[in-house]
Image (cartoon, rainbow, N blue to C red):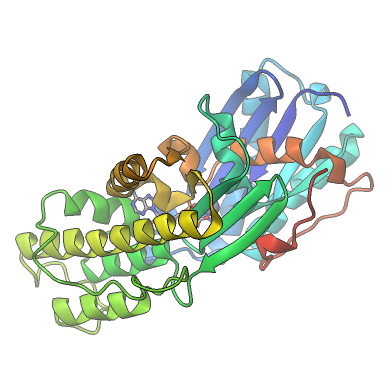
Length: 346
Ligand code: KG4
Ligand code: ZN
């Protein structure tokens, strides 16, 4: 395959992401459409609405991004798309367009693992790590520590036993009456709060590399004095809500950062990559930066826009996985897909 112009399509959840990546040049153009407003009245992602909206947005976005890259569809050399994990209907939309384009243009379609794309997004930055490194993958559905030997050589050495970190942010945000998606809203409410106001638990902090966030979530629920289902806005003072947000965020950040440092030590690694939506959290980034400095470890982050879902990371991962391109287009959509099952890229 020629080394140029890979279209990346991301539709695994509630963001439509499209980008054109050119090896050696970088991201030539990209666009992102967030469905936040569509799902906000429901307090979370409604899968059927997500699929329908991807259908409406995706084709015009592809046209626009390809034009912005100064290209025509015929100039594309491959189409990479998120094939999982994610919402199956949403994945099917991206897979169908990628397969159709590949078929029509006579170019390969490359199925991409969404978490691998998060993990490799940092490679789009100027400051990029050498292998091997430890990756903290923290998104809405995943919380994992992964020993990364090379592209495709992944070993999960720690993961959550219950909720993902992003999921915990979203649920606690809901208890505090914050709009979906909760993570960024909770983080900004926390700015005004006292992180020491509540002594929330740090489950499993002192042992092992696995995570657990459900006990913390329950502790917050008890603190706000309800069943946690109904938004509590209006029933708690603003100051108290900010204190809960700050104390919760501090507990999550402390747990995540402690496990990262332990994981680095256990694996004998000196580089840490933080990826996925929660990686955009400012306190987490600061905390890891200072712990890493003290331990002589280098920490690498994608910029916040590359931490959350986007098409660029899919296009780049497609390039890394070009050897696995499908020559006969078929649509792959895998709602569940463990990262460790990926084949190494030689
Ligand atoms: O990686 P991502 O965009 O999508 C998934 O693959 O899940 O991650 C979304 C998650 C959500 O749970 C969102 O609340 C959380 O990342 N998130 C944050 C922040 N920005 C996004 N959590 C904490 N602080 C943030 N600044
Ligand atoms: Zn994601």
